[in-house]
Amino acid sequence: MQNTTEPGLLHLLYLYFIPYWLFRDVSQGDHMLREQNYRYNRQQRKYLPGYLIKWAILCALLLASHHLAKSLAEVVPDWYEVFRAWALFSGISFSVGFALMSNIVVLWGYLTFMH
Image (cartoon, rainbow, N blue to C red; front, side, top):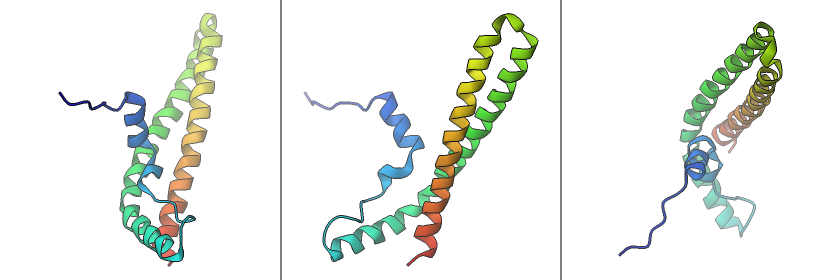
């Protein structure tokens, strides 16, 4: 009987949406190891546009959700607090996603154009 553990849902979502696990640390080790890790990171940059597309779609959905919640808060006054909380969560999530997209673009640009 094998003793293998399956990764949990949160771990799989992390691997699907966050690209940083693909890269190695280039600040540790001697010069040769740092150079090797940098070359490895340059090879891994090809996956970054896929992550950028995932986040662009997710951010578009979050922004649409934010606007929908704001509109519903005005239309249904009895549920105003619930829809405003939904709008707040969607707006904050969009902001975090946009910051991550900016980070992915900078990382891709650095690994592509800096030698």
